[in-house]
Image (cartoon, rainbow, N blue to C red):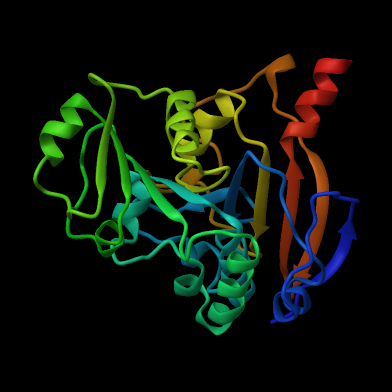
Length: 273
């Protein structure tokens, strides 16, 4: 696996990767902490999901390069944050680096060790309603489930002992800032969110996303179908409130493009203008 670096801006946080990962990524990669980073794959027309039951691998066209980058980002992360719909779409998934791209399992482990991280990132699942399958293998590995009091009543006694339930609200909407504060309070500086688009939308709406890694897949999904979901759902930005981003890198593997955007730098630039 080898990505071609087409553009790279200077990044003082970049760290030397293990040789196999550096060769595969086409350079080094690093992050300052604390940081909230999002990673998504999208079709050319902005679709990230065909319906609630279709995994992102359909949109990525089964790209091995996309799985490699997903593993690389997970290998940097203290915690991986997902919404309940993402877990329901992939009930047997494990949100670890080696699960998504086994060929580089040893290199991912080497990277985590060099960063002083635990063997695996902490999985955090947000479910206000508590509509989760307690038998999902990822929950058995020790997930943090963030919910409401109503969700707690629904999930109590249905989760594996290794998972922890945390109630942030009596019911309804859970504030993204409260979720992030809870994760940071556990000592997780670099948080990686992989969806879904409604969860991403809530964090973008709260101006909490620092970086976006976007894989652009050479597919067109079209707009037909009630289940079509785009990169950002549940929130709209207009006029002066449109979110801006600074392009940090562009990589290519075949017809797939791998884009890295810095939203924090754009926020600071807008605040100083």
